[in-house]
Length: 394
Image 1 (cartoon, rainbow, N blue to C red):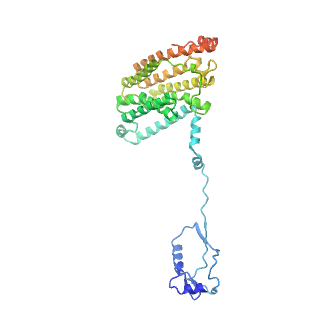
Image 2 (image 1 turned 135 degrees about the horizontal axis):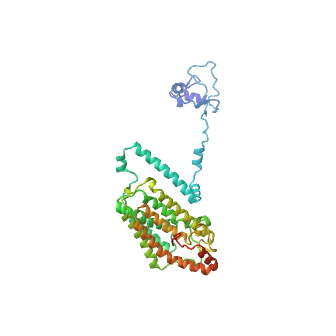
Image 3 (image 1 turned 90 degrees about the horizontal axis):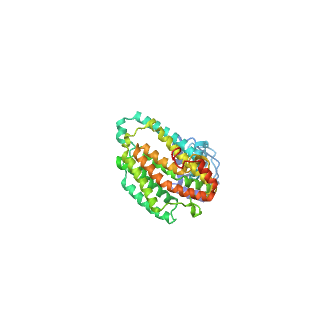
């Protein structure tokens, strides 16, 4: 009663309450509530009753007559009729997708998988390009094609400087995986992208393809280590199997390979004049042959070796049944394929000559060590497989 008297003396009660002769009036709240009902509130929210507040006015006698302007005691439970979200398998797959799962999937890919998905990607790309050429004017694609990229010299020079820095750390044994990748990327940039970009003013077509093919080709050794040991680092091994020619010979070989790629970009026609379509089917066949040859040769050598580089037996399977040094042969075939793609036959002969002169000396050192290690077993293998690098030729 004390609270009722205190509230009755106020002209305006809080929360829209007013006290009129011991009766609780919710007239202002009632007006708003009626207005909200007429405004078509969402059906998913319904007001239910049966909430006890501990009303201070519970001792006030309730009127026996209902008034139209009074509301029943407010009820405060809210229910939602929204249906539960259906389980979508596509959304569930993307929710469970993580960087580790993507990385594990990539590491399980084999060259055959790469070839298969590359073929599918090429078909999708060709279909998309054909569709866009039909939908748009050819003059638009001639001047604004997304496949044309004017070569950024500043990026190439900065990448070369960073590659030299990483190579210095590699010589000290301090380069991590990212820095080793930077070394290879800088080298392949100046082999496959900078020369045609310099002589053409822009890049399109085969230089991009071989930039990625070279990466995949020369990282087979690293992927084999990952598959066998779980990481990318070389294991300690007997130094006698590190058969390297003198430093001047290696420098001459590197300079010759670089010069051969620059000559190929200079000798070949402009990139937009190189025909496309089915005329390049043989180039793709050579790329696939090169990758499979390198992969199988590296894999068989690793299976019959300790720490990848120390052979425990004479390998006579896979590509080793055709030539005695298939890894060197696949490297030469990769350079040959690059020159054929750019239509540079003279540069092809130059690169083959450079590779033969260098690999001949290295093969002689390796064969002498193999005879010393395995004796008659390797001698019989050499008499059976007579060709070192090129089947039926040399």
